[in-house]
Image (tube, rainbow, N blue to C red; front, side, top):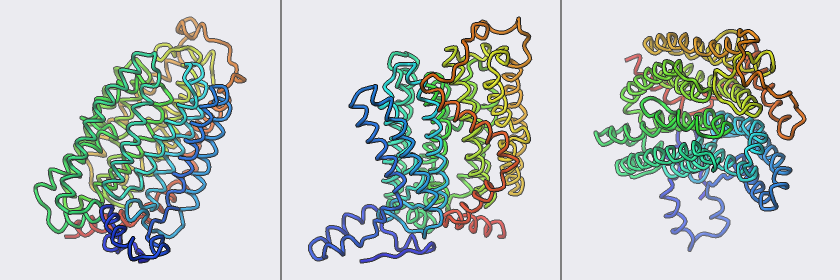
Length: 539
């Protein structure tokens, strides 16, 4: 009963989820207990998720002991769980590749890379959350538990290789995100954001289920690789319809135009630390889902989905960066900025080459630090002033040089100004696109990058260039800077760490590029897609 797997024979040997029940039923009367245990569960592959789950349970338990106990013990429990998860992911990097849970989960290097981005984004989001949650009067234990639940769903989504596990992981992430968006119960904007997110997200889940049912009907399997083989052998118009449904779900998750309508309102109304996580952790899980579904399942429709994603990328880069020019709220500006950033990452996805996939991983890792660094500055400014308006940042350098410097460096990196880490990530994306002859995407990316620099520079100019008498009323009444307040030291650690990595990470980015290239080289799914793209280019 022992099953062994090789990279090339995964689809032939791996068992799908529906087969699990049949196997157990057929063997429970005639197999010895030790033979049942020999089925290829390989639960060690989800050990990092197990650490996150234990941390989530720990925060719920200490929350039952009261708010005082939760405020004291929830942070170290979260740090321990996420730190252990990141350590186990590092250990998994060089372990032999074996499917888990009878083919429902695969801890390949692509999954490890994106799971690390999700876990690290949660860790940084928690560091910048504690003071914000305490000041708003929100229960810290509940907040941490829901955020860890979203992290658990996002990490499982990165490695899911079965329609059932994909849907369960996707909904775990989504439901937790809805709760986080409406966590400020007394704030009408937060409740409105959660309601909009819930309605649009529920529609996206229904669309995905319909597309998944079509895929199961075509292939009689829920395993993504077996579905891909079935579609490759006999592509049908029904499969093209399933592609449209699946692509709509992916576009919603990464906030691509025209499936972006929820993003500005949710970003503006949600608690700022939640927005920080959604902008990085949820988006990273969405791109991992895109790679699993589109590259893994729809190889037979490679040209079609790449054409559709080209359109989505052009629309996202154009609309996201142009509309951001007119925003007066910092969070809404970063919401439209994130839509444009998703368009940049889609360039690597459309390429389908080794450089394209590697550039996606590099840019998501760079985006993690520069975006969360910007949100750390915004949260700190909000804690001290209660304002989110860009105009209220006028003259800030006079009162708070740290926020001014940190926010300036992170915004310059988001705009792609050298020598920041964002510049090297963006150059790698454009290089991959140009090498693959995606000239339209690269030209649109370059033009919209210049547009994005304008509104990023406008914020920096607002903070730095204003004369003392032209400072905003909020800055004139700026409170004294005190770092000893509970919850502020972790925020300062996250802010300084993100800003330092953003500022010097570009110059020292060679290990990051090597890590991304190794992630692509160690992922059979991507290697097969690269070979297929190369063969089609030679024909």
